[in-house]
Length: 189
Image (cartoon, one colour):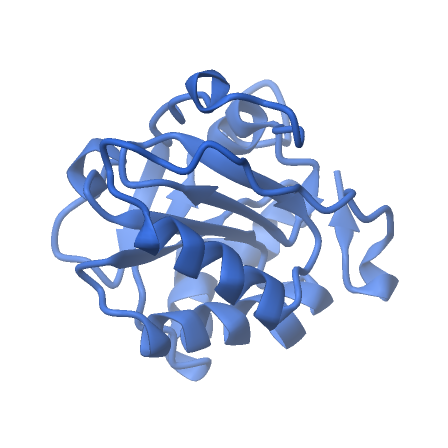
C-alpha cells in the first residue's frame, strides 16, 4: 500500500498472478507481457453485489474509453466463498450474459485455504478490489471496494501521461479501504 510520502523508488514491482484459466484471450497473459501499458486489475466474484453493480460496469467503461495498447483492463475472478457455485462453466455463462470482453483470469485455488493464490499474494481483502499498475510494472494504487469513476479515470490518466522511464515524483493518494459486507456492496474475506 502506498502513502502520500512514498518515493517512486519504493513503489513495488507487482509480482505476477497465478491463474488456473483465462477467458477472453487466446493466450495466457502475464504482467511482463503487459509492460509498457498501464494495467487496471479488477478483482471480483460473480456473486458479489458490488462487483456486479459497480465494478464490472466500470471495467467495461474503462475498456471502452482508453485504447487497449495504452491501458490493459484485466479481470481477476477471486473466489474465496461459495466455491461450488462459481466454477468455470458458471463463470463462462456469466461473462457471456454480462457481455464482458476484457481478459478475465481465474485466480488459482489453494488446496489448504479458501483464499486463492493471487488474492493472498496481493493482499486483497475481499471483493471488489482494484490494483493500478504503471507501465514499468510497479503497483501504484491498491484499493478495496469501489472507487468512483472520476477518481479512477483521473488516476489512470495521470499514469498514462507519465513516461515509462520517469514517473511523477508525487504518488497518488490511496483512498481508505472500505469495511463492509456483501449487503453493502463489498464482500470481505
